[in-house]
Image (cartoon, rainbow, N blue to C red; front, side, top):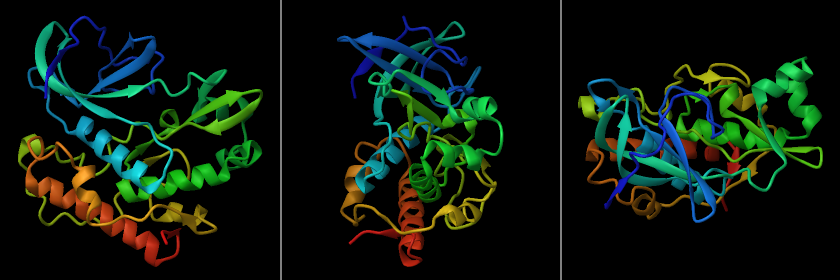
Length: 265
């Protein structure tokens, strides 16, 4: 992959009008009249970027897009960046501005503060119940651990709100175990009920399935899809990680399918 020089961009962990708040270094730029956002993986001074979050953003984007979910399309970029005075090469994920056709945007957390009441009541008031239910299904399949109130955005046009495409999925999959640490993930239970950070519902992805009151139609996932979902990842992630992530995605997909939460025929 060709190295792209992004050292002139302003990399910051503060909210800069991009896709989210958070602790990951982000930057934005205008290219050919369009606004794009870049995000690094987990960074620690002295170790540079050591996490797999950028890879996982791309994998989740490909997987969810394949199934027909509305999500931000991420691509992988091999870049030279400058963070805290250090210049180094790393992989970052890139996405295009997804709210350019709307009048305004606001996080669910901030809108909830304005309206008061329960978040469930607000979701009903806005008429976005099915959009939220699809998000819950997507988060279950990708084992999303960080769907906090700033990682859910609403787009407004002519007084009507819609749920923004799903973004910031990098803390899903095997994110607690960076491949750089060479963790043995062979016995990792891909169907376990791990505690997560959810703004809607509970800290259990399983318990949140109670919101699903009808089957949702998705595109069918096949063994052949593994190649496109992990395209270009063989040199970036260990085979054991790729195989375990595929196991996680397929097992959780089949769990929902067998129990009637999703239909793929």
